[in-house]
Length: 164
Image 1 (cartoon, one colour):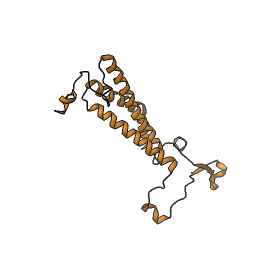
Image 2: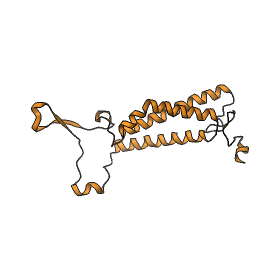
Image 3: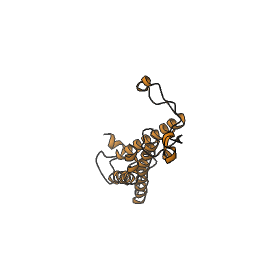
Image 4: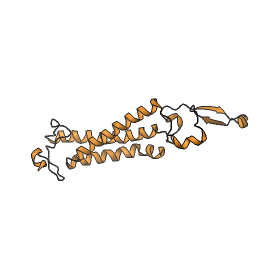
């Protein structure tokens, strides 16, 4: 009955008139629907870009240190092989005592962790907004989101995969 009151149907369809997030945003013609589809596809691509950027910010990322956010590493010569120009990488974080490492999470780094948390919140909110559009059951909108996510994964998925 809820679908009848709002004019939305609870089955896949291609009719116009479904609101997208707000009652004021209702594509009423084919041009408006095409614009909404393009916008939703771009949001799908943006969601995958955010996932890739988040993966680069992850402390467990295997991305090169100079590509990670907030990298504070330095290169110092290795004493035993200095004449061969070998170097070892060290970080500016102090290690925990041996027995306590398993008891604690890595230290909170406000400059990295707050930004990473905000980025994840934006990515999650975008995912929820896309899910709400899928719940309209409008076939063209769903197809646009799926295509946008697929193109985004094609463009940025290897970044996420290499950071794991």
